[in-house]
Image 1 (tube, one colour):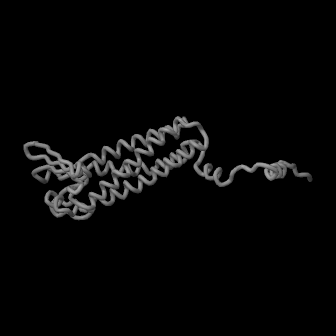
Image 2: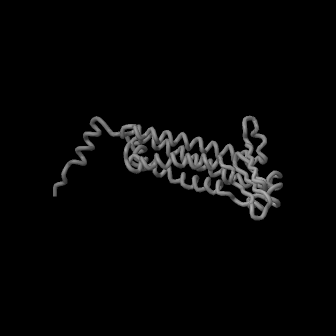
Length: 219
């Protein structure tokens, strides 16, 4: 498959895997405003970082090896599982999309594209759910100790960081991937379903149908 839409689908899939992976790893999801506070503090999906007045910057991981329980909120734990799981599915679908480039045109190629499209659709729902669940953890005691009167979907003295916004943009762009998968082979996915449900007829019945449609009308 070397169609323009197919190659664009593969490139966009790879780029979105990189964007989502980077946004999930960055600690800039919730940021403490340095203009109104004495120190800068930021929270991410997996990291917590702080910068003192003498510009000493330190970070530590919430979900290190054997430290998953140290994530300060059940909502953030669920968000980690959902976002990372969706990102893994997106990476697998991107690999499958890359493989379709080397497949010959035909039913096998279309099946691979349809499968990759379904996996990408599932990854969108999983990562989107993780992003929606994350703000529920703003009412944890750790966040309140830095952000003041924070609550669910209320960051208090903190604000939404660019890392969280980048994750939202990445997931929104991922919504378009299944549509490109459908058109990536130049043949819609419904053609594959038609081939499975309506196999070509053979034998006397097919011959009689062919003669029926090819017989000219006499006036």
